[in-house]
Length: 179
Image: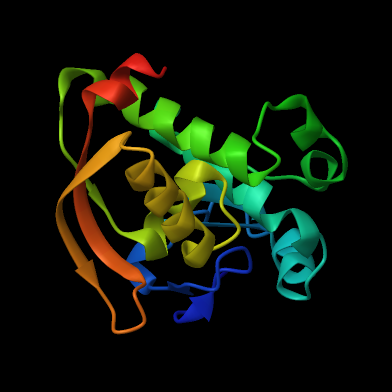
């Protein structure tokens, strides 16, 4: 059972009491939701291993897979050691900055961008949609898409250091045709 205010070992976000998924049917597993990864269920032992940094070199890949799975199915992902050891390699995921940029552009297109739907983006939560390692890399992806005129910001709030805090954006015609 998770204690309230425990941190998600994959994202570092605090797991609030309202984010805990009821797993009382099996005391050996824990489940929770957060905006970065969707919903996940795993053994308490795996949760501890992740909290200790095991597999931290692939966290961004795992978080991206979890988020994509939840966005598509609305079902919690059952994370296992076997998945972290090898099964994640069976998924297609972007490996470098350009692939992450193209993946996010395709995500926007497939989720309403081709119909000029607007997107509200919060980099601290949405970086997983691009398989970015963190919000800073995600902001660089957004800036690249903007500089290539593939997206247009209709509103953008930035911190003093230039980091995007939130943004509303649409795909441009060039972005739609670029898919």
